[in-house]
Image (cartoon, rainbow, N blue to C red):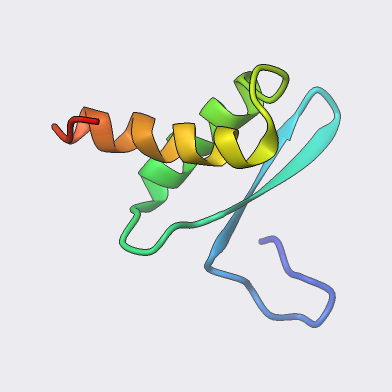
Length: 71
């Protein structure tokens, strides 16, 4: 079990350990845990390809496109 410093579990964030670095990804409203992890891996794998704000937007667009939304 992962517990924060104040001993409360934050259900609105996920942690991914990759290449000895911990990435903390905020969960979006109405997003499933599976979608958050998929978006988190998209962010990690594309971290050097976009500036931060564009990366977050692209990760959301990627998930929504898989649900049939068009941009």
